[in-house]
Amino acid sequence: MSLPWPDGHRAAAAFTFDVDAESCVLAHDPAASSRMSLMTHQSYGPRVGVPRLLRLLERQRVTATFFVPGFTADTYPDVVRQIVDGGHEVAHHGYLHEPMQGISAAQEAEYLDRGLEALDRLGVRPVGYRAPWWELNWHSADLLVERGFRYDSSLLDGDVPYRFCGDSGRGSLVEIPVDWTLDDWEQYAFYPGWTGSGVIESPAKVHEMWLLEAQAHHAEGGCFVLTNHPFISGRPSKAVALERLIEDVRALDGMWVAPLGEIAEHAAATVEEVRRIRRVECPEGYFDRTGPHRTAPGH
Picture 1 (tube, rainbow, N blue to C red):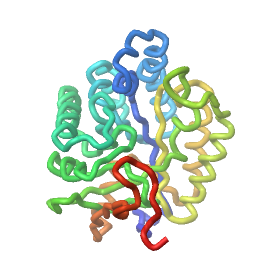
Picture 2 (picture 1 turned 180 degrees about the horizontal axis):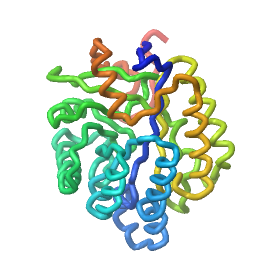
Picture 3 (picture 1 turned 135 degrees about the horizontal axis):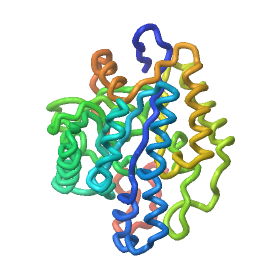
Picture 4 (picture 1 turned 135 degrees about the vertical axis):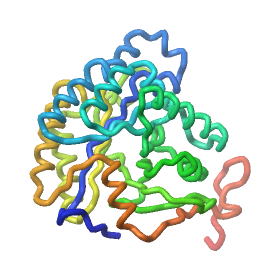
């Protein structure tokens, strides 16, 4: 599916930042709060990374989207105010970056509401959502629509925005797809005993890979969405490479660089088809209840 972009632009690009701070570590293991070095590894994001990235974005005249867990908003309210004062979009990213896979609708609703309350305390009412770990559930869309969200950016099944609805069909969201290739976590994230393979890539290599992706999206009229984390890409050499990338992306002829909220607003007014995402079940008998593999029917 192609999407006409505004004002004659050929493609779109968005630079997004997940301001996880300590939240994702604590959600994974609350006992990690005793690991002082690990906690400082994460607090680097709001304390040092976000201010550096805000200066970078101001130099490049780019408006970005910052996905902020409620815990980050409660712990670092001044950082969220700096993001807002910089003219950037603040969107929802759970409360404590909770594990989302397979949770009930009631539990997910509690996480959503707690995150909204934290952002409300700072005068922010987000229209966008990104699930922690990009893990939406089949009931997530209905919960988001009920709370007035206009877009999500967690799914991986497209190159351009589309509209989709939940099982109830009571309303639709714009989905702005993401891609693990375009996430700094996979390139740089490492902490002993917690995350990563131990292979921390060169920023020069990462710049080259991401620019190739941006050029390909540009050639096809797609929507390039980069996901960064301030505790990772806010580090000096990585921030330098990111700024160079932003310069290169902005230089692509006809590339529209915008926050996700603006891209979603355009897509909502442009895309007529509303997709109901199909749940694909495993064929009966392909796996037994204890897990061993069986021969699929007809094979």
